[in-house]
Amino acid sequence: MIAENADLISVVVVTSPAAGQFRQVDLQLPPGALVRDALLCSGLCPQTDGVAFKVGVWGQLRSLDHVLRDRDRVEVYRPLQIDPKEARRLRHRQQRRAPR
Image 1 (tube, rainbow, N blue to C red):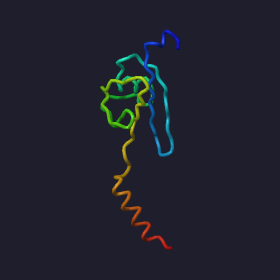
Image 2: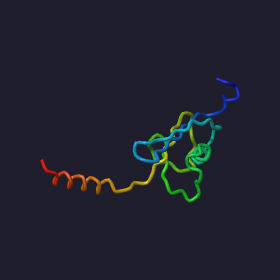
Image 3: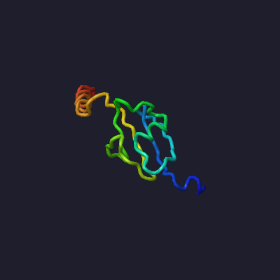
Image 4: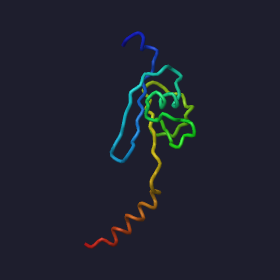
């Protein structure tokens, strides 16, 4: 490892702009960096003011002020298009109507 990078932590920021698509950015950040810092440095979510999306670290919802650790994975969640329960009801209705 290069001496100048010895004091940095490695963080990955991932997002899925649409179903079946994802983007990933690997970052080197100083210790004590926040989720907000990772999002801004990644360029994937340039505006964090009035945030309209949810973020998590390793599948757990976190605030923008959450302090990151080495090898953390920051995940940006897009809003749901439909309530999962309603989607399940619609699929069930369509399956009942489908000819066999």
